[in-house]
Picture 1 (tube, rainbow, N blue to C red):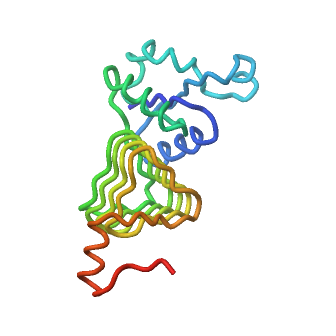
Picture 2: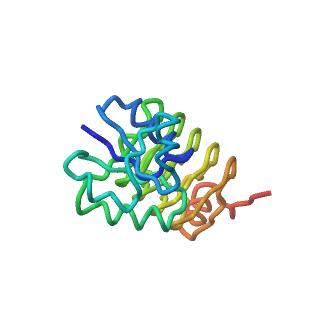
Length: 191
């Protein structure tokens, strides 16, 4: 199988390493608007065109993945690619995903990420190294749960949200508050 990655910046290079670690792809190449031909030759990069060239490579690549940090741009290109490619979901071999969790198309889970029981991750998400999603959490489409961030049990992260490095997400929706009261007999406290 071959994989076309849109975005050859830092995130794109990490995505490439995750894809390589899976052992599923024989050929991986990039499309990126910020690389020039002389940069490609000098850096021995596999950038083969610009983002807008995606439709020129449908016969050469089975899968595509959008490795762009901006969630609006990520969503735009993932939706464009869906007509011509299978959208890859990439999970690093040392990430842990519960067998009862679900992960949407176009999501990348990096090394050391942990997704617990009954968690749901939407399409086009970035689950960075060491991120933790505790049981029954929901992460909406095109979110970024950054390195070392934690999403507590029964929390819902709205679509397009970024939970930054090392943060603990404290979204107290009614479902979470009611479950906390049922289990502990008190309102939740965040110190």
